[in-house]
Image (cartoon, rainbow, N blue to C red; front, top):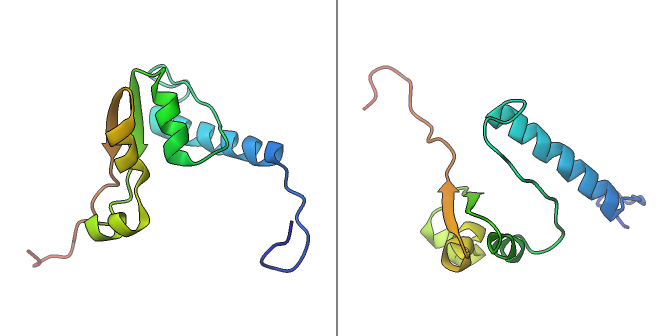
Length: 109
């Protein structure tokens, strides 16, 4: 596989899946503790994110997706995985946005 740096990178689907699973476990541990405080089912699936999530929603009670909050105009141009899930999922969808940055300087309104 060619890379941006001009050398060959031998990176298999299995390597990518293992790395994704490790990252997923770290995020769950950081967010929910070890062991998680609620039942969590995870899987690493190759495919288009919106399509994979909608398919997974068919056997789920709840689908939680993130949103980067890029704004309506940018989302319209780029497409939105969370928007697609809200419109097409077979279960309830919760969209989680990142915390808003607040200005902590004194004297600002």
